[in-house]
Image (tube, rainbow, N blue to C red; front, side, top):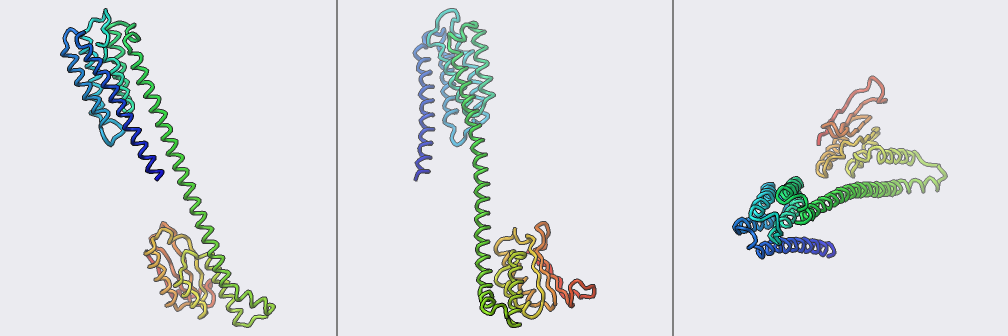
Length: 337
């Protein structure tokens, strides 16, 4: 609800700003109409008013885009160049023209909107031309007398505000990126902690009965119990060195292989980390079947690095010592995703 209310407030503020800009622009049109009798011919002023109104409407009511389209900005620039020439051509620069010089504040307003809408070059060219044309038409003193300085100040202020907003937006994006990275790190850390706790609980569940028996008998274990201890130690080693290669099917297959006398080594090097759930399940299912069907004294299961196409490699050796040169390769299997 708070988010929706915030969005609604921003929307209303934008509409209010557009409404104020339209009202201010309309004020310039009203001033021009009240002084329509001052120019020698009213026609250039009427055409200028119409062009100004079209430019304002296009600049303010262009929906869905913060930056003005090029053609609208170009039209606004043309209007800001033509109107001063057209209106001033019908005025006497050597006397007070009153509100007949409405175009100076009007062009300042239009170019301020252009600046806010992201077309800085067009705004600077337009306001620069307005200042030069005024000096050429009525002299240097007209810059302050006719309000050109005020129009220039409005454009400069809009540029400063937009630069500040742009900088603030970039800072906000950087902060958001840092926050996302921190959140991702926190999520990964929490997942690591949860996984570690899960594995500790799983290890304790497996080891607790044998540890209790060791304490009860004072270490006097039978051959069968000693074999179970060795099997438990190998299982715990799998959880540390080969955790990415394990699911319930693989754990069961490895246990059965060890109970029939095979030595099994699991080495996880991240070959399954990039796989989705279905691919991972398929690879581990084939791995469990391969371990169950292997007729080997030693099984070495290794997940390939991520850069390789093969997800898991299974090597089965037949012989008393896996490091003996006389051992036979009973199984060589590459499992692809």
